[in-house]
Length: 121
Image (cartoon, rainbow, N blue to C red; front, side, top):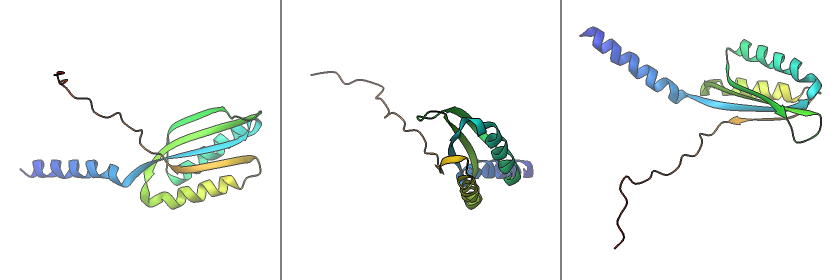
């Protein structure tokens, strides 16, 4: 009986732990020559904060010779200030052109379709 109660307690904490976390996206635009060094620096900064990226994308930016680094990570909402500070530190580097940082919104889902179609009268 106690095992069953403990099991339900564990399920409660696992279910509610995601409510205190959110996905954040960090977009950085910089010269393509410094992308490797920037990626390594960002990795170590996130490592020091105890965070991991769930998705990393590197691609060309709209302007010539610039690259865009996009990082998606999940972190507790209580640590949001640490992430803001990291983004501010990165934006102050001379080789970085632009930094955009914010909460990643869930994609809009399509409205549910009816199971049965109404017949035309």
